[in-house]
Image (tube, rainbow, N blue to C red; front, side, top):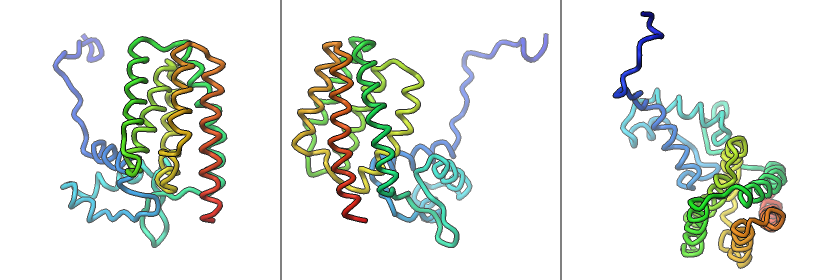
Length: 225
């Protein structure tokens, strides 16, 4: 019997690598706004805080740089990436199309479990404290993530994950608009259309939502520029 013909023991589990744990920890810290755009990252301090050597820190930083969440600069070290107005514009152009597609697909494909997840996610957004922009951002992104999941399309899910990272950077850089008066009404309109299985209405409601807040973000970044 060759090695390839041996059955794999059921109890076998691939160990979790320290570098993977560090990567996920730092990724979540950036996406949740605990590490904000422009913030410098010190390998030594980070290693001491996490209780790990510099090697997994460096490997995680390299992966996050490839992901576009961090940027390494010669003689300046590593920092959380800031987003230009043009990058934000490009992001929201794509987000309008992708969120519209996700909502339309979710209207056609969502399950009863998806419906419960979407309702719970939106209830959490509506119940959150408006003055805590980090919490608002985290919950808002979770609602949109649930919508992408309800679309039941693996390719869209992969694209949505990458786009979420870009949107998170923008939201934490501008610290704006999750508690805007239009948010609750627009979210409710998206969810209603999805649960009604009205794909056309769901698509348009999602696109309107992105256009509304994309314009506000561009206004903010334009003023900052």
